[in-house]
Length: 175
Image (cartoon, rainbow, N blue to C red):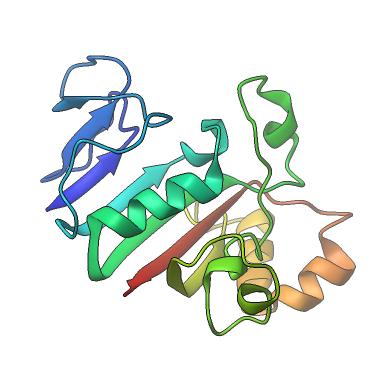
């Protein structure tokens, strides 16, 4: 099963669309702040949250729910505003800000996952991409490619001066 959580009016092709409102194309009307989600354990092969997670009350609780409904190896794609972007703080409905290390707490390959015991659920962080959907030409596109390839240098030296807009995380459910 492919799930598009918080799909709004732009549900991905072939996905089961979930949203709080019964927009055209929404298959399941559900408030993603309410757990459990209306799915059995281990049913999803692919889950997307496109600019949704920053609006939800509990990031850790949401990740635990994604882990529950995702099969082992389930791909989870999460698009969120980059905390340095003006849009991250402009929208009054945003409750959370995200950095490239925001999901390190869930990844056993990162020291944060053992240090803080926020949760026992685990995801492998497979990729972090800056401004993936913002075009492939122009200075900002070049900067986004540089930031994606040289994250530490970008974060240390360039990000405060030339902030980008969005982060895309590709995760895998680890069970």
